[in-house]
Length: 71
Image (tube, rainbow, N blue to C red; front, side, top):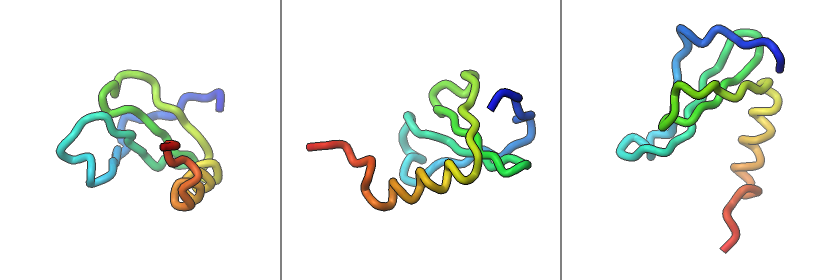
């Protein structure tokens, strides 16, 4: 996406398992059917913004173990 969304008032969320650690990916659901992703260790770095469809495809793949780290 080429336009930069206003992220001033978004609510960033992260997995509850990461509450006691750093190094987590945070997600914010934006108006206009978009999703922003950022590294909580570097919140000043511009987030990566994708469509909700792209996000849902990624989540489906993660649930199906498609992104597990090989042993």
